[in-house]
Length: 453
Image (cartoon, rainbow, N blue to C red):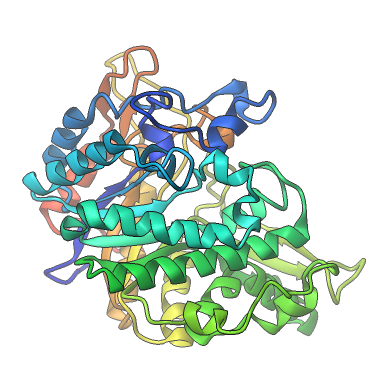
C-alpha cells in the first residue's frame, strides 16, 4: 500500500501557450512560439496555439473542472508577452487582470496556485534583440517577475521561475526543433547560462520584494544508465548525465559547471559568458526543486569515438505515443539521486505524464487504460522514494487538458480531460475519474508495483 504525508499535495498542470488561445486579443504581443508555429514545416499539420484549448475565454469552466476533480495544487504558466507585449516597457493591464482572475478563482476553490514565469514563450520582441543569447534578457526577466509579483504575489503559493531550461537551450537553440528554431550548439550553452542567471535574478528580486510564495524551478531530469559496467560505457553515461542533468543541478547546488560540460562542449564554446559572481548568484538556496520526469536513457560509448561520442537508447517494453519507454523505476532513481548527490530538499513532481493518441469510443469517452497504468506506477515510485527519505511534497500530473503539444501539435495528447477540437467541449477520460479517486483516497488506492526493482 502506497503512503503519502498528510500534507502531500495532488495537482495537475497546464501552460499558457498550450491552453490559452486568444493570441492576438486584449493587448497580448507575439511570442517566439507564435512565430515558430506559423512557420511552414515547423509543427505537425501546421498546428498552432492560436486557439489551443480556448482557456482564455473558458477560464471559469476550467476552474470548476479542477475543483470537481479535487486537485489541491494547479501549476499554470504566465505568458510574458500577455503581460509585457514587448518583453519590457509598456504593461498590458488586461493581461495582469486575466492572471489575477486565474489566481483568485483557484483560491476561491481551495486550490493553491503554482505560477511558472517562463514556459518557453519568450516575447518575440526580445528574441529580435538577441533572446536568451543576450545577457540582457536575464535582467528583463527579473523585472517581469517583479511586475507580476507586485500584482498577484501575495496570493501565489509557489513560483517556478523556469520550466525545463534544457529544452529551451538544446531543442530551441541547438537542434532547432522548438522555438526559436536555431541550430547553433555553442549558442545553446550561452542560453543555458543566461536562463540560470535569469532564475537567479528573478528569485533575488522576488525575495527582495517580499513575495509570499516559495521559489524554485522545474528541471526535466533523466535517469542515465550505462549499457554495461565497462569503463567506457560508464564514462559515456557520466558524460550524458553532465549534459542533461548536472549542467543545471551543479550550478544551482554547487556553484560550478560539470567538468565534463566544460571539456566536451562544442569546441567553439569558451564559457567567457560566465562572469565573476554569476555562479555565486545562481547557487543561492531555493525553496524547492521541481522535477519533471519522462524518460530513462541507456547509454554506451560510440565505437567510432568512444572517448567523446555516445549512443543512447530508450528502454521499456511499453512505449508512449512519443516513442518513449515507460520506466517508472527511472523516477525513483532520479529522486533518490537528487537526495544522495545534492542533499535533502523539498521536491515537487511538477510534470509527469504519457502521450497517447486519443481514441474516442462510441459512448463518447476516451478509455485511456495505459495512462492510468502509467500514473499508478509512477505515483507508486514517488511513494517508494518518500519511504527512502526523499522529501517529495506533491505530485502534479501532466496534463489537465489535451493541449497544443509543441512541435507535434494536436496529434498526441497528455490530458486527462479530452478537448474536442471543433467544439472545445471538455470530457473526462477514464484517467480523470481514476485520478479523482486517487486524490480522494490520498493515494491509498495505488497498488505497489516495486518500480525501482
